[in-house]
Amino acid sequence: MVTYRLREPRDYVIATGGMNTLQDFVAESFSTLGLDWQDHVISNPSLIRPSEIMVSRGNATLAARSLGWMAKKRMREIVRMMISYQGVGS
Image (cartoon, rainbow, N blue to C red; front, top):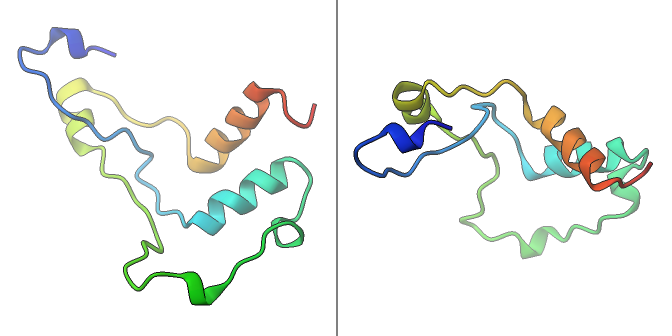
C-alpha cells in the first residue's frame, strides 16, 4: 500500500463494495468446505437485536481516490482464499 506517501495519516475502509449478509458469508464458508451451513448452525430469531445489521456494504471510495486502491476480488473469492490459506479442508 502507498500510505507512506501521504502527508497525514487517515483511516481507510478496505472493502469490495458488494453487499453481503452474514448468512452469505457463513454459507460460502461452509460451502467451500463441502458442507451445508444449515446442518451445522443453529439460529434463534428471538436473539436477533432490533438494531442488527442485516446487510453489510463497505464504501472504499476514499481508498480508491487517495491511494488508487480498488478491490480485485469479491467476498466469495476472499472466503475461499482465507480457508485455503489456513489449509482447512485440504
